[in-house]
Length: 64
Image (tube, rainbow, N blue to C red; front, top):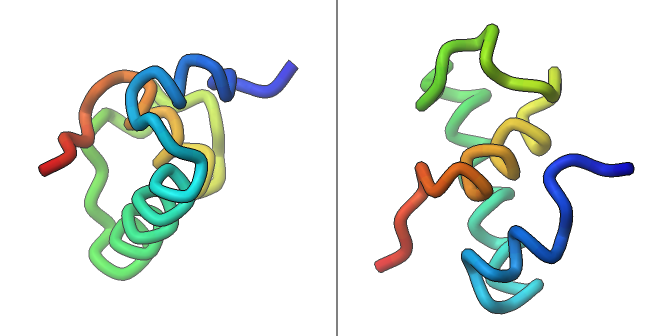
């Protein structure tokens, strides 16, 4: 099973297209600035896209 589940993510964001946009921007920010909102040991995923999805699931990314 993929973590976090798409159902949980869509409850936070509302649209698959918005989710893709938010996660891609956050992943690029992680790569460029080496900026994480959780400790690296707390992430399940090792890749920036997965880590950005985890941040959305944990309500660490706030939409305007």
